Length: 291
Length: 264
Image 1 (cartoon, rainbow over the protein chains, first blue to last red):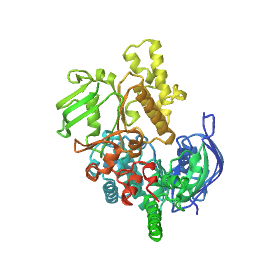
Image 2 (image 1 turned 180 degrees about the horizontal axis):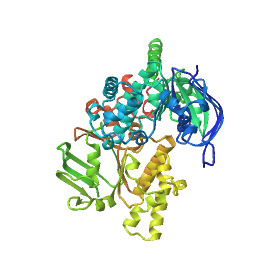
Image 3 (image 1 turned 45 degrees about the horizontal axis):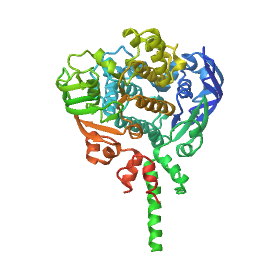
Image 4 (image 1 turned 90 degrees about the vertical axis):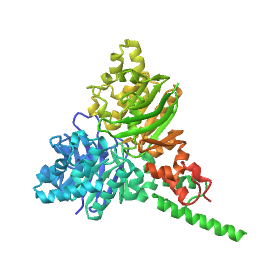
């Protein structure tokens, strides 16, 4: 069964003049980590809202075309059931945090309580995710007193703890430092390895290049490219969508433009280093023969 | 005339000594990036520059005037501070009102207010959003609203706290263009950031901090070439810099152009 099937989907928010999604056809498989990239306003968050069922249940508007989530028409899903099946991390942690819990521990435990998870299981799960995110020291603190980055980690932890089969994660690292961003991506990659299906919106393209199986490129409400990460990052659609490439990919293109193409387009540093090292060995051998 | 921090210490009420013995000068029109891990003292340092915090030892002077004995409101006219999270800063119900808070506080006349607001709107590209409620705007636009609200004022120094966080590529371009115009006007920009690409592209001077002290003050190439500084400040090299180093091409690359000619 597929994660999602969108056929010619157009969505216009109530009171909006133009469509936020326009003619989107997209097929998402289970067990993959999909990265969604595009400029602000390209439709990334609207796509997430649709996959989570916030459209049309919460955000009102007009949906045209068909949306199937896990083989069932979106309109046939009970919103509560969909919410249990798909865990959502919102781009703004202020939207996510309940505001009614006195401690970070209780905040992370809140969703689990609602799912009827036993207290001992809750303690295990909250402890384990907090440890991985380095926020154990925050557990007794009040969520309202946290910095933006700390709040973002708490919002992320509270959703990951619920262990949903599908995760839709919108810009989880926008307020985090490089080490914490890396930790978040490692957790997401682990979840994928455990068979979860993940849709991840994120601007940090170097991390996307390293971790995403496939990329969905959005521009002006349309999906302009979808495919394996390495293929997509080499494709012109990325330029058209005004999405940055990894630095090492830009380097490979720059080498090509001066007649020193690597014959491959790397998207991660180890790939680039391997290709350039091979080139340097070749040049040495050549120099040796000439000498 | 510069902002000068001389042997500045700051201890928070709970006793945490966040900054210990910082000496730093920021000249008019200069661009300075302060880098380092969370807790290194970056935010405390910039808050000391605009009077949001006061030194518990040492002195801060702005254009020769010590900040001691002056109100934060007065210092803020010279040194503007744009918060990392625009929601910590914006509180008006529409963008236009937000932008006129400073003029109303300073009792500017309508003509001057209009001139300053127009300039700030132009610099930040927020013209289409003036009648919007900031809460309805996407995060990057709110960020530019927060920047515009500071630029309406007549600061000689602007502090940008993590300005590129959450920005897409068009947003980053807008920010870089804005910073160029501020430089043309002689306005200094001090940033705190984890975005090393932004640092390498836009800041001739980089200060690395660790444990409340300045451990390096030089060009981006200097800082990224220094293993000891990187280890102590837990900074990650730019991908191209790390690649150049791993392949023994050079230790001082910060841009693609720096390595292009070194690859056969």
